[in-house]
Length: 87
Image 1: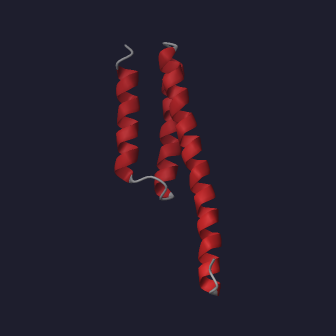
Image 2: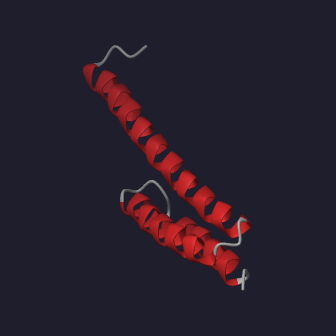
């Protein structure tokens, strides 16, 4: 256990940031699942809408530093490819 005041603060700050990052990652995963669910249902319009929302959420997560920009680009690319292959 930390005895120094600054170390105690770092522990608290880390807990807060970890909770925030976990919530954001969970939201991104949910959005991605919605896109794949629409693809499974062969509903291209719903898939496009879900994709638009998912991209927005992923870009926000990237701007907050939760995901690296290349990770976000890869995820978006895979979703777009899956939607394009529906046709």
